[in-house]
Every structure is written in C-alpha cells, then in structure tokens.
Image (cartoon, rainbow, N blue to C red; front, side):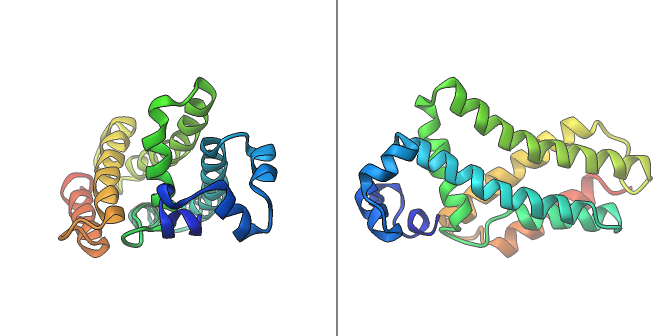
Length: 179
C-alpha cells in the first residue's frame, strides 16, 4: 500500500515491488497472477483491517451520533495520497475491465460499509436520536456524499481538505438527520 500511495500505479512495477519486499517479480506473479489481482488482494487486506476498526467503533456503548461521527472520520481520507484511498482509486479505475469475480469482491467491500451504516442509522431512528427515515436510502446518499468528498481529499483538490469535508458532512448530518 505504501508503495502504491508513494508512486501511484504507474510507478509500480512487479519488479520494483519485488525488490522492496525481497521477492522476484516472478514470485509475485506466481501468487497474484496479475497486477490487478495484487491490487485487489491488497485492498481486501486493507479493508479487513478497516472493517475490524469500524466494527469496534460502531459497537461501542455511545450515542449514535457519536458513532456516526467515528464512521465518517474513519471513511474520509487523511489527506492527499492517503494510502488506502489511493489504492481504492487505482482499483476503481481498473474495475472497468474487471471480471465478475473481481466485481463481486469489490461489491462485498462496499456492501460491508453500507450495511454497517444502515444498521447504525436504523438504530438511531429506533432510539429517537435521528429523524424518521429510510436508513438504506439515506445510507446510499450519505456514502455518495462521502465518496465524492473523499475523492477530492485523496487527489488533493484545493479547498476540499479533510477538515473542510468533515465540517460539510457534520452539517449535512445535523441539518438532515438530527431531530
């Protein structure tokens, strides 16, 4: 992930990566078959770590709005060239030509984020901490907002730094979801 974030996919060769991890490019290709598979497996590994962190944050005994803030904080990249988001962008960019298996694996990653957010919103509605809503529809909209802003942060578009994005999302939640 660090190599991808530092150099981007154009700067990543199997030979160069092999040198960094002490393997030959042939050895890497033996295990991963293609650069696309290497990227997707790296993303799945990264998402496994983030998923565990997300589940721990969301299962805390805290108000829904606090846990929703933690979800947003975990979702939004730290800044330009955030390693996780750089990897995501590379995988998304290459997914136009992905096979059905790769698309299903990407959908599983997206689905986990979505299901956790839906469950959290539904909990907030049931406890009266959030306005009545369709949690699935609101989760889709909130994730689209987060994705759009996160891409801007990850690629370094001026005026869309992490702090500004977190403020926008916080205002969206306060204005639209809080009773």
